[in-house]
Image: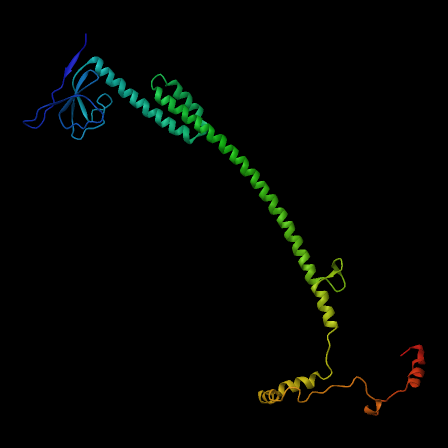
Length: 269
């Protein structure tokens, strides 16, 4: 035989219980609003009571006014299911974060599937996603390792090429005279040495330097004022020897004298 209990909720003087019918999750209930849920009657303990199921409430929002032992059992069982559902949700979150324990959590979810079919299905989906993520991570790790190896090889090759280029650049700059860097090609040092050996020093350089120093702006202005070709001189292609003045050290030599001189010592002149 069913057992019933009656709870009388006391309110402010003049307040009366307001019967709201069957409980609805989307309805807002105020203080001492009464509803029907799970074969029992419930009274709201607070205002703005919305979305709190009397069967799973821990006594914060609802008091049972009239209930039989079966309804009480349903409420206790519902609270147990809620606690188990919270535990399953926590296990599912751990499964998503730690792929190594996903199988264990999935097994636990499956064992509790009879209690919460929805939570078991969610855990299984999470375990599958974790396994896929783990496989993808493993594949990415392998690809990253291969890329790292390739990068290392490329870096080594680049270093070899850089060293070779550095050596070749040093040869192009510093290889000694008359030593080929490549066939028929010589270093900058080679050509610099050749150029230094072939430097032409004019005999009148000191005079020219002195002239350049003495050449003032006024003189340049004077020269700029001379009419073009006013002092144009054309040197003859040939001239007679009487134009040359002999000195004590410089003498004009005839062909016969030159021929006789060339035979002395066997060295032709």
